[in-house]
Amino acid sequence: MITLTEENYIKAIYHLSSNGEKTVNTNAIASAMQTKASSVTDMIKKLSEKNYADYKKYQGVTLTSEGKRVAINIIRKHRLWEVFLVEKLNFSWDEVHEVAEHLEHIKSDKLIDELDAFLEFPTYDPHGDPIPDKEGNFKHIEKIVLAKAEVGSTYKCVGVDDTSSKFLKYLDSNHIALGTIITVKHKEPFDNSIKIALEHSEIVVSQSVAKNLYLKKI
Amino acid sequence: MITLTEENYIKAIYHLSSNGEKTVNTNAIASAMQTKASSVTDMIKKLSEKNYADYKKYQGVTLTSEGKRVAINIIRKHRLWEVFLVEKLNFSWDEVHEVAEHLEHIKSDKLIDELDAFLEFPTYDPHGDPIPDKEGNFKHIEKIVLAKAEVGSTYKCVGVDDTSSKFLKYLDSNHIALGTIITVKHKEPFDNSIKIALEHSEIVVSQSVAKNLYLKKI
DNA sequence: AAATATTTTTAGACTAATCTAAAAATATAT
DNA sequence: ATATATTTTTAGATTAGTCTAAAAATATTT
Ligand SMILES: [Mn+2]
Ligand SMILES: [Mn+2]
Ligand SMILES: [Mn+2]
Ligand SMILES: [Mn+2]
Image 1 (spheres, rainbow over the protein chains, first blue to last red):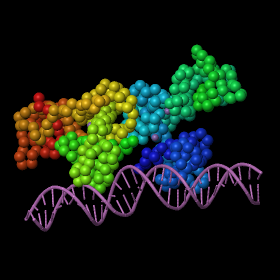
Image 2: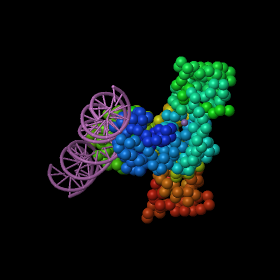
Image 3: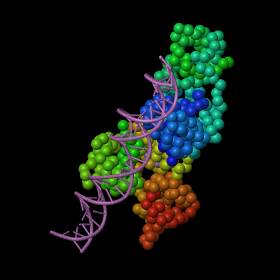
Image 4: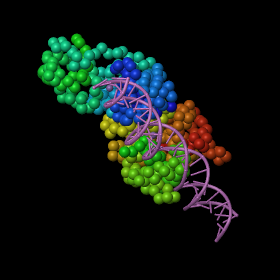
């Protein structure tokens, strides 16, 4: 039996270790989970006892293969529900994350497999993130962050890092969506802002925006 | 803030009081919730403090109007999800209850209203139970239990009391579904079993079956 | 290499929900 | 009306998850 809280910790650890592949430290988990380091220590002990994680005191934590399997399954559910909400229930991409955060914990294999089929086996969620299949396989998407794009090159927007409503609404209001074509015009060394050209406009975006937008060269 | 457990208790109290309209006693709740009377006492104190229930020691409990509102909203969600599972995800009527038991606790008004619209505002769930609308209104369905039907009369099957997989599978295997036409042929005084005629067969059902099948005279 | 800063763990306490066992209240039977 | 049975409540523990404050370990500076 795995609890909802354990699932959320496992998912957080998975996401934190999929960037840099090393062990994940306590404070990073605490900040991701919006909790205190002492609570994290308690939880990673429990995850370790239940064989979802490997952990040595003061040395950080990694997921076991079973822990990874659990994490990927929750991510699969989360992203499938997000697709459902956008495709079938008229949610916009900035409204789905919070609800999916709860729906991802519903435990029924039939439910998720039938949902997958109902949605015609989607491979990407509304934020451009790949959806694992039943066996947990998914392609690592080819992408770079706008902050590291080259001046003069043209890209397609393929994803976002921040899925908060605030950020996504900002993109909406600037007519940036998945699939939007972007040409990098100028990088301002003073504040690392970037001027980009869209189909019908040119805008300047701040560094924090540039760090959260994923592009693919075309 | 209302917890999942509080919601389940409120729903149980609502169901227990919708039969006989009097106060609901501790042991009845304990048996419905599969817990102990002492746990129930603690919980109804809490529900009372939070103004979901009225309670005087040793005198049983009733829901406040706010408590009823909460109960009806959970029932609305439960039944809409059941319709979704059957209509869209190929679940059979004996598979939906358990999953809906969890889905009913997802908190999002937009989710449930959009789901309602997506399903084209259904008025009955897969077990023949009425679905409350957004304002909490639903028609009390006209029905009698097979155990009290008259010999010689013809009825339509309109609902079930027991929604367990076991009972529903029994009905499936005997070709009884919502809408099935049933004529009562004979009541056996010895064991209260009843012989009924279906379209292509005659079968004898036990008293416990007869108590769980709802009919409407036609 | 020692001093200082940061990170992590431990100790002890809290809340929600549960349990068992015993006490108190209410209902039923003689 | 008294004795007995049943129901309900209380008292005290337990588990999951959280917190604060203090101690221990590790990392960084000087
Ligand atoms: Mn979650
Ligand atoms: Mn997403
Ligand atoms: Mn429930
Ligand atoms: Mn139902």
